[in-house]
Each structure stands twice: as structure tokens, then as C-alpha cells.
Image (tube, rainbow, N blue to C red):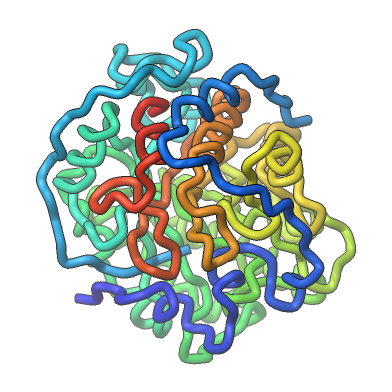
Length: 411
């Protein structure tokens, strides 16, 4: 069974810059992006950073499959850290179950979060594809993992249809899969038009049946994830927007005919401009396939390029980037459409990839943002990836010590 060696192998697009692969602005746009180059917090300053951010006002808003690691480790030893977040602002991890909003019941998702959060929280754990690793990560952070990021194959239509390792590898995990579904394979087969015409319906029926077969008929499916991403064959432009919408609708309807309990997530890359449009909101307004086929609207956010931040000013710009829709825009859009909101992938980015490295400021601001949008937020997954293209890992291995301490306190 495939073990998906690297992001580049999965994305399958030669010649793209790392910035593009990480879901930031495209290479052609990178030179136009201006982000303050403030230094990251000094070593050992996590508590001070969190205290300052916690006391700052919160503005209320109006992928990637990576390297498969061979290492698995046991539950890390507990360590004592100072409380970094106001108990009034964020429930203490492990403080008991809390009722989740009606949207979770409507989708058939768990009705209570053992963490005390008003949303489901999960992770991608690099190459650690099993329930044991998820339990260990939950033990480390002090609250159970409730959702896990996984992806379909993408080498051919047959592989997309038939591969089920990425589903059954999480046998024993009691939470919900967030399944990133490739809709055009790397081998050049098909097009958005042939998908919309129904010529590949057997593929979507097969994927849905595999999910049901392995007891995952209530998974969250990100059809054509990062819809505005030029690094994927299905990545839409202003010119192909209508074709993308039609293809998405076809896939959603075929899958739901086989597995009515599936939850459909329309997902874009945060801060990524829709090619061919000057409207920063075009990735939402032009690509959104319709309320009748979407349950959740999401955005993948990484601390890089126009969505990186280490100050109040840069954070405000990061959640409403000039180039394209950001976290705050997507939350607002989801609220307006009476849909759930998601952050299927979010994480740090190493400095060599236009990120800010071990940036605990970003971790704290993300928690504040999620808390502020808990009325519409359904789930979020931290992208814990140790591979050198990203180096976002907070746990096993610890690549970002300050950020890991902040995350552990806030989650």
C-alpha cells in the first residue's frame, strides 16, 4: 500500500516554488508581497508572548500530504508549564465534556467535546498514520484528538477509486476523518469538464463505498481541496471557475448518493489569489459550488508569505490578506451562508520557506481567532509535519519548542 513519500510527490507538479506548494502566494506573485520582517520572539519568551497577545484586543471577523515517517514513539512524559491563557477566554484542557453547537448534531458529528472546546480539534501527524500516534499526541497536548487529516491517492483515477489504505490505517481512532479528495490525477486523465459530465462517476462511488466499508461514512470530505491552488490539476482560475463548480457539484452528489452521511467541505488556500481575477474574494465568490452541496467552508492557513504574522498589524493583514481571501473572510462567508467553518490545515513554516519558524505568537493568535469564531467553527487540524520542506512539528520530534509549549497550554 502507498505510504506517500513527500509533499512534492503527492502534489505532483514539477517546477513549483516551495511557496506555492505550501499554499501561499504563487511564485509569480511572491515578489509583490510585502510582509514586515520583524524578528521572531526571542528564545524562552513564550510566556511573555502569550501574555501580551492574550491581553490584546481580538478583532471579530465581519496540503497537503507530506512525508511518511518510519518512527513511532510512545506518549511523551508530562511536563509542567505556566498557564499561558486566560481560563475565561479558553476552557482548560480536560475540564470535562461540553455540548457542541447544533451544526455538529446536524452533520452527525460527536455532540460533545471532551476538551471543553466548542469545536472539534485534530491534527496531521506527518508519517504517523495510526490511532496510537493520535492518542499519544492527544496525551501530550492534554486533550483528545477528535479529527485527523488524511488524503486520497492521486496518481490515476483507478488509484483514487481503489486505494483505501489512507482510510483503514486509522482503524481504532474514534474520531472523524477529514479526507482530502483529489479530483484530477497526476497522469493527465480527465478534466473538470469530463468530471461534470459524469464520465468518472465510478471513481466517486468507489471512494464513498470505501469510506462506508471501513466505518467512515460520516467523514468530512474536502472535494478538490485548496480549490484555488495552481499546484493541483484541479486548481481553478477565473476562466475555469464555472467548470470547477460543476465538477465539485457532480462529485458531491454522486458521493452523497452512496454515503448520505458524508459531510462536504469546500476548501481554499488562505491568502491565495484566484488567477485571472483582481477581486481578492474571488476564490470564494467565483468558486463556491452552492449551498445545496456544501456543509462546511474552510481555509488552509500557514504562517508564511502574506499569511505570516508576529505583530498585531501583521496578524490583521494575515487573516484578511491583500492578495486573496483569508481566515477572517472565510469565517464571514461561512456565517453568511449559514454553513460551518473549518481550518483543515494550519501550522508554522520554517524561515527558509518564507515563514517565521518557531513563532509562538502565531499559535496564540490562532487560538484567539478560533475562540472568537466558535459560533461557526466546526473543526481545525494542526499540521504537525517534521519534513524539511515545512518543519512545523511541535511534537515527535520537537522542532518548534516555544510554539509547542504555547500550543500545549492552549489546547
